[in-house]
Length: 358
Image (tube, rainbow, N blue to C red; front, side, top):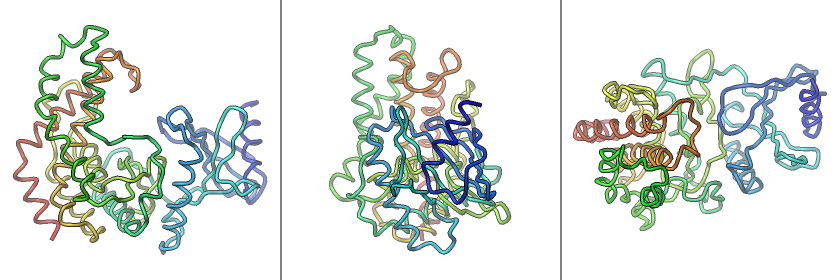
């Protein structure tokens, strides 16, 4: 009860429409701690304690979110289509208490949040959500944004970290995973293609979401159509191809990320087609270079994630939360199997992109 009272005190620091009366844990996010708050008026809000260990520059992060949401709101038809920050009494976007950083959003009513697509249409709608987000921000000056996690999707930098941990081999695990190490090293040069294209200007610098999982698009509860893109903490400058690729890695996979039986892991071409169609049709601003890189985006994001899991396994499982022995290794293996399956289906994936991105 004491904790609840403290949370109500935190809420009183924000411009709610009435006195807060309740505040309970909400959702299943891994990084921030989220609560559902209710005011005496019956209006609902989301209170979040922002993880300042993951995000070291909270003012920069909140500047990003404020700038992007205000820009989107000027274009949105449905007020539910954009997250609405509730300011503090001082007009700030967050509240800093003794040991924590807090923010409040209006709760987006009459929406649902899916952890996994139940149908191809659900996945298509997530593509519409992320594609529309990209399209609406296509004239936002991306260079204005702070990098909330530096080098987040810099694949060559992820390889550099992998090679350092491999050389150190502090836990002597490298001998146990030689096939996985060889798989990663064999694809190292190809995995720098997108970063090079971004650096050279071949791929335009855009505002990117950088966590394009299905559960970060709220769907309208009645129509089940894309309504609002959420979880904007990793909104940064980058390439649209990363956002596309990460969606495919997560949503077009046929098995769980930590599945022990890797034979179950494939890329679903039906889901790949559904997402490609939704993303390209809702974001007509994509350049020819971006469209040409969509398939390699899916492969790169999957490979990068696999390398990160393998790095963490070799380093003693410090970064990604694990609930059993070898879980990070299983995660690396599923990602590498997904990459191998993409390579098998490469011509089909490229054909789908050509057919859908007309």
